[in-house]
Length: 125
Image (cartoon, rainbow, N blue to C red; front, side):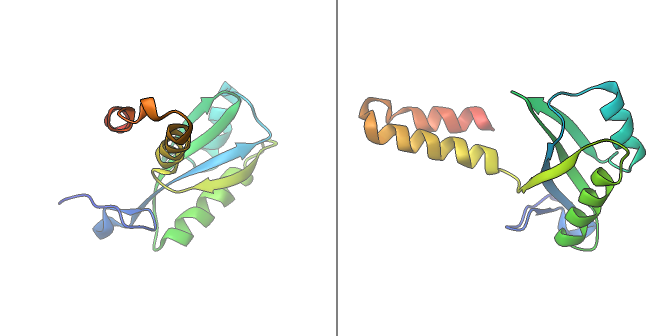
């Protein structure tokens, strides 16, 4: 079976697995308590990450719809006994797209970096 991604973040359409990221507030780093609390609340289908004081969860959640997947993930995070909340939902690829847009804006002011976009995109995967 091939894996596809539609514009709503639905991946592997036949299985109903949805890919998205939840960015958290109330936490600035990963701790053992954070990991245990999120696992206990039902976030075992997510990868916990941290970068420059921002903590998030990359989900591959099985559900009947994209909305149901996100709603159940938010409920799981916020039902933990931890003092955290979901700050925002990010669709797949959004971080890479934002990086490309920053590069394109910089290119307007610095035409000499025009050749770098292809190299940047190849490094993003």
